[in-house]
Length: 310
Image: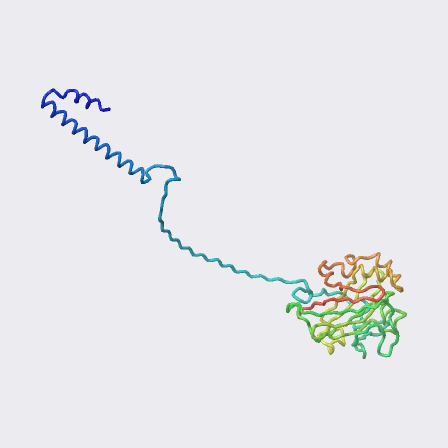
């Protein structure tokens, strides 16, 4: 209730001047009321348009423009080289020069006062070394061994060498050498020459060598440029030796007839104490040792590579 208006209504008999003042005051009050109502309507309108309330009763829209550019470059280069450990496919070594020993029969020394040169004899170029040749007769007994040799050029990435000659010789199962030992002066078995083919390969058929006192079981060889130059030791490119693997030698000596003396001889020597192989590195000894397959009943096949630099 408006208490000022009630008082004016009760004083209606106070004259015109008073009435005019009351009317003017009431008019002013009405204008104020209208102003307040107008203000209240505006507030209500604003409230209805979302000026208040929780998020569940409000909606919003937004527009945005965004642009982005990006460039990236990812490049990589790499080079790699690899070499395997195969003896003829990228990894090989020059065989160390070893002594030819006292029984080479290559024209460099003699036996019983006479020069001995099996390389000049007809029939020395052969694969099977087990029998004597050139008018001599006799066959060396022992466990059969097929030896496959590959000759490679260390200077040209282990490429095979064709047309070279390899002279191979070694002792009997009893540890003796033909043409030198007293009971073998009239025998020339376990010696021979082969030429390498287009793959640098040649093959010898022989026997497993015995072990004589003071030496590790081994084979000797010399390399020549060709069969034509293989008639004398003066033309050789390399003289070296092959070491027999211990496990194979032990099995042969213990299990094959005729090798009994080699058992005790082998027990007194090692490849590292040997007076030929002992000063070589472990890598050189491994390179000089053939790889064997087979057994003591049917014999063995062995493979080895020989490296020279030409």
